[in-house]
Length: 216
Image (cartoon, rainbow, N blue to C red):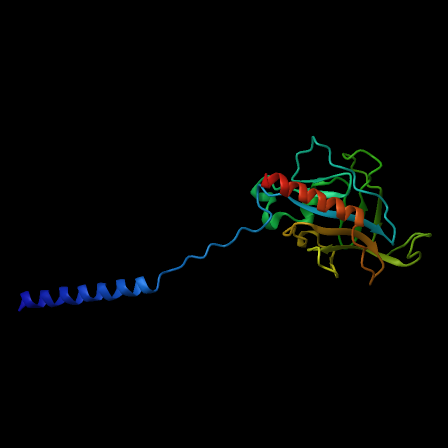
């Protein structure tokens, strides 16, 4: 009886393993690998920059000296080149807040906007001007006498017409190549203008040159 009982158990286990193996073959397990969040280390993105205070452009961004080893560098044409050098500068960490950390005298939040001073050396920590929320636009400006507030507008693609506006720099992620960003100080309801056509063309030329070099 024990002998036949053991044989029965072996037969049941054998059939069970065959059925399980057949099921696994017909229903293979798929593993989904999450795509890395751009920009990754080793990639190069570009963005066009602009500044606008009450309808006027106060200054251009001073170029980043070649001796400064930052992951975001500015050219003379108001273009920022984004090249993450390490994981802590890549992906979701690649934001406008990181750019502000690496660019002296630039500050923007809900209460204050400090305009970078292109008339002095890049290393200067003294801004060209500091504007506080609720301050009146200066005489002679487009919105003279109106209360103005710090704001950032960004267009995440070339096809974007209506930008997103915010005062939280960490929410502006450089996750797309060829973005446009304007730092502004405007009356409520006024959207800062996009970077100029010349700046946009310079960005597209820089991006095209990088793509051609990589392909070559």
